[in-house]
Structures are given as C-alpha cells and as structure tokens.
Image (tube, rainbow, N blue to C red; front, side, top):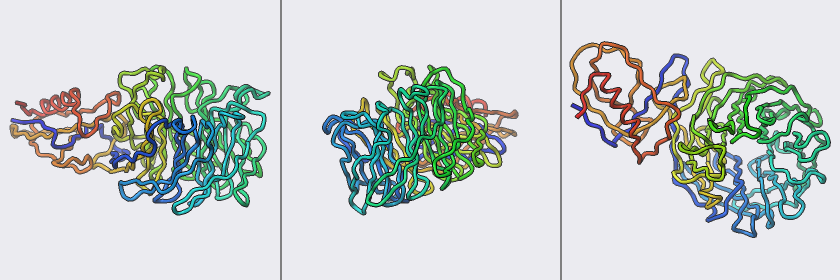
Length: 487
C-alpha cells in the first residue's frame, strides 16, 4: 500500500564515487526594480551585503542608462540608491565593481556617437554618482559585444568586438583601464586576442591582480586566452573549449573560482543549444580544460554565472522545453538555475538539479555573488518588461552525483513490502517539509536485485508548486521495481 502527494520533495540522482555534492537553489522573494522596459542588465558584487545593478531603461527617454545599489539581508534584497548615468539611449551595458565604494560601467552610446564609453561610479552608503563618459576608442562604432572586469582597485580591463577593424571585421580587442583622481579613466593601448575570426559573446574575468582570462566565440569556435598585465596586457596562447556550428553562442559565461581555476559555460547557439560547462586551469599565460559537463539539454538563452565558493558557481539561464533556441524572437524560456562545480580531486564538472526561479518569460539575466553561498539574480520579464532581482542561495543535499542529469518533484511515499533483501544504487530522498535539502524517507524495500534510476537533464525544471507527470511516472516505476504496490 502506498500513496503519492505533494507534501514533500524527492530528488532522483545518479550516484557515483568521486562525486560533486548535490546542491539545490533556495530563493527569496523578488524585488521589482523597474516597472517596464528593462534590458541589457549587468550586476557586480560590491561587498558581502551589496551589489550594483545597471541596465537600459527603455521606459525612460527611450533607453536611459541606470544603476542601482541593492542590499542583501538574508534572503531579502532592498534598493539603497539609484542614478541615471546617461539620460540618452544606452545599450550593451556591463558593470564591474573595483571596490566596495567604486565601479566602472561600460556601454554603447547608441543615440549620439555609437562609441564604446565607460564611466566611473562613486558609491556611498545610500548614494551613487557617475562621472563624465570616457571614450574607449574614438573610431570604432556600433560595438555590441563588450565585457569589463577589475584586477585591483585602480586597474581594470575592457574587452570587446571591434566592427570594421582594419585587420579583421569584429576583431577581438582589450584595453587596460586605469582609475585616477576624481573618477578619471585612462584607456590603454589595444591588445588583440583574435584577428583571425569575427568575434562575439566576449566575456572577461580577472583571475589575479596581474592576470585575466578572456573568452569568446570565434565564428562558432569557443576559445579563451590568458592576458598578463605587463604595463599593457600581453596575450597568451589561445585554447579552444568548444567547436560549434553557429557563429554566435546562445550565451557564454566565465567564472573565477580561484586564482588557478574557473569555469567556462556556454549555450552553443544551434537548435539543440544545451548548456555545458568545462573547468579552466590557469597557469600564468597557459590554459587547459577539463571534460565538458552538461548542465541542461533544454534550449537556453541569456546565460549568466558567478562563483559561490571556491568549488561551485551559480549558473542561470532562460530555458524553453518546447522552444527552438535559434528563434530568439519567440523564445519562451523560464528562468532556471543550477549549482555547478568541479568534482573533488578532478577536473570534471558536476551539477545540481535545475530549479525554476521565474515561471514567466525571462530575459536579460545577470547574477553576482554576495557572501560565500548566495547571489543576487536580476532579470526582466517578457520582451524587455519589468525588471526584478532576488536572492538565491545554495543548499547541500545528503546525496552526491557525478552527472548533471537531475530532476525534482514533490511527493511523499509510504510503503509496506515483503521482507527480503535488496541491493540498490538509487537514491530516493523524501521529506515532510517543503525543503529540498532536508531529507528523510519511510520505506521497506523488497527486491532481490540491483535497481538504478535517474532523471534526464532534458526534463524541465519544476518549482515547488507544480507536478511533473513524467517524474511521477519515474517515481512509480522506481517503487514498482522495489516491490512497492501503488493504489
């Protein structure tokens, strides 16, 4: 005799030896930050309790560049300060904090010059002020792929794809940024990271006070390069992490875990467009990768990620179980996140279950860590609609997995069976509360053979208020294999 209900949570996971701990994602209530017209969102950590969020506000002057200071208290996020740094039309915004009281935002001045510009942002306890704009290159126009990072409180780097460059259209370029008195920004000379292919999906991350890593799509080939600060940045060797069929990815994210290790994650931009990650080892100007691990097989866009610990990162994306990733106009993805990390004593990547964090059409996602186990995720609802931010945190289950093929469902099982011996490698965790990471189970098993069950990563993520018929079927099949009768 058994029954199934929605009173508890079950996680079906493939178990292995040398496993990455299975983390789930807890979530706080969303904070509305902009009622409509929110796009090109970027977020960066100021300190353990504050982040800076910048975005284009199409409801203000057709696209005013706006930044806000958000404070985190447990699982709650509140707004402390706001500034319009450019009242004209801005696009392709990216922000990086340099300290708890300063940041740099870079963007395309879409209305006037179409130049790539950067501004210094001075952050107070309840205030934020923007400097005048500094042009990165007075020739290049229409820059649509750019990324900025800080190495120290005074030194940063901006990397971008340069249209109509004399060496190669959309050549890959980086410039050193040095902060001076009064918010001045000195722009260094160009360092090229790719003059062979047209570049897109450019992302850069600092790994130490003197080195950074830039990753990009070289017409569908995913590549990364280490850059070392030697006055200006010197380029290391290029290392390929993926070979694809689409010129641009559906998303690309680079995460620093430690000075010597990180993660690169991507959605490949073709019809399948699954999200994969590889570990990145950084040794001076040399890079190497671990094997690719699947995060989700669902078509995905708007990929973002940031480190939570030295071993794990929050990876978020908009996933559409029924969509085609190549059709970005009609893409109906829901906000989804996994905790992804590197398996202990290995370079392999493992992932926790996908957790739905926004049930509506989700776009322009950006995440930044707060303390060592939580992050703020900001996003816009359908078609650059209202903008919201919420706190997400990682919570460890009692199970480990070497794979990334996981699903979740809410259920309770109580079973009475015949008393003979069972050997099994399936993990079934149930709980009498709504928390995924508090686990208990009541059952007596009875089969005399080994049973293994796992969910596939292609199944959509489930939130705590929805039931997946396919997963209930999987639970029923598992209980039947264990000799449990259902009524």
